[in-house]
Amino acid sequence: MPQDITIKIIDRDGIPHEVQAPTDMNMNLMELVRAYELAPEGTIGVCGGMAMCASCQCYVLNDIALPEKNPDEEAMLWEAYNVKDNSRLGCQIHITPEIDGLAIELAPYA
Image (cartoon, rainbow, N blue to C red; front, side, top):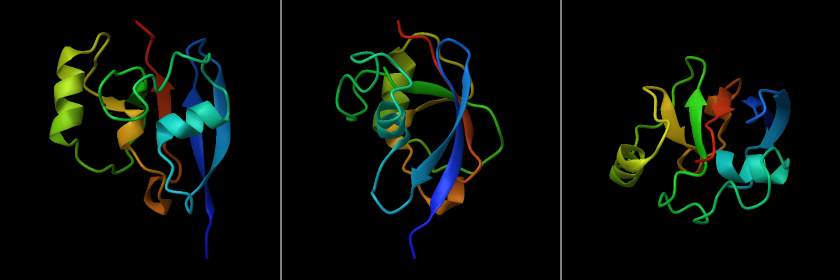
């Protein structure tokens, strides 16, 4: 049975949002941010979720187990601005029941 999970997202203005995310639509965090319009149009998911632009870079704020970074994500983060140890690409993190309670902050758009 499909279920929604709760994700906390701090937008680029520092405003926290607690949103409900469906686990049955094969969405990722970048698409969730776009769906809730938490970043201005054209500043997130510029490459369409192909791990080629880092516009969906976010900082993971809590200790939720996430899938390992794939080589494309590693390469993009190597070239991106404002990268921290807890940086991830939102387009590479799919909405699954296992990430319920995840807290992220959107990285600055550079």
